[in-house]
Length: 269
Picture (cartoon, rainbow, N blue to C red):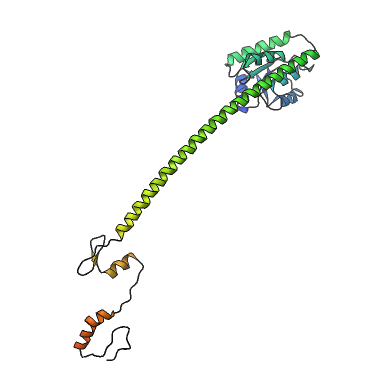
């Protein structure tokens, strides 16, 4: 048989196609009722397996359209759904003219048996013209089913939003807690760094020669230590006190007199 699969989800169409083709059937695919009717206008189809919840034209409306077309009214149609699963939904499926009704997912043997039953039911179906009162009843039931499904979807959405708000509140609480922990840790780190900085400024210095001990336990002059640890450079001179205490006496020993201390006028030999 050549079977038209109508479903808006590609994964569902592929799964059903593989199942039917494994049993020797050929298949066509449509993403909704509108596309299905376009295919039926140009292709010969032996049966239809259709989802119900679809955009543009759902499975109820597709079946209703088929039963109003002389060339398609006897075409076997099975509603195959995972969303319209209540007894009222199944009753509406029968009311609009579906031959069989299945809920997803169904085993292969159930699908094949239902398909055979739908073919038999279609052969036994007598030609009939729906009265206006019948059409009005069907549309009323169809509208009621849509409203019910909309209410269910709205309820599911409200529950999802409530769950999302709860998750968001929990996330914000965890963020606040984590932020407080990080601020505390940052304060402790800043304190530790401050203490390290203080310790680094404590230089071990000889009480007599004023040399400094480095981290390798070597004693160095202040100039050498500072030069190794900073970019500082030194120029040398003599302060007035040292000039009077050390330099001037040495000069006088060598017969040099009249030399003035730094900051005074030019020295005289």
